[in-house]
Image (cartoon, rainbow, N blue to C red; front, side):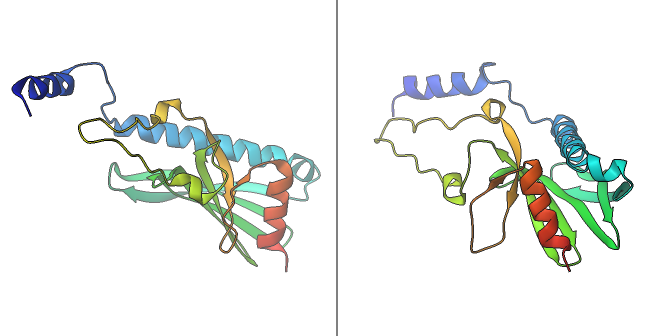
Length: 180
């Protein structure tokens, strides 16, 4: 390696081209916004039943602790339908392959809601192999700011396809976790 290559490397590392300095507060603010959007979608999906007093939504606060931010308070949603209560418990943000996760638990089982790249439909798409020739930089990965994040249902094994969160898929998920 020549000094000029190293000089270029040092200059690149010290340039202001990439202002992607990690900001924990910004990360948490985004997480809260996406979680709020999820809760609004759930409320919309349940509107008919809420309006008829056949279902009820309430919230309580829980404390999460993550390495990047320490402890923080976050809302957990509780959906009550008759004798069944389904909880939507945030697990965290900045997960491998996802920007956030919410566990769904009902009397008959559980499910997971994952905030992930809207273009990902299977777990295998989360694996990326990059190949380059010696002396060449590997192809760049997409930056998080270029990803459109969407809530998806992540079934338990053996199925590993992610299901787009729609009113129909949501109601089907509720039937799975709440039906006795």
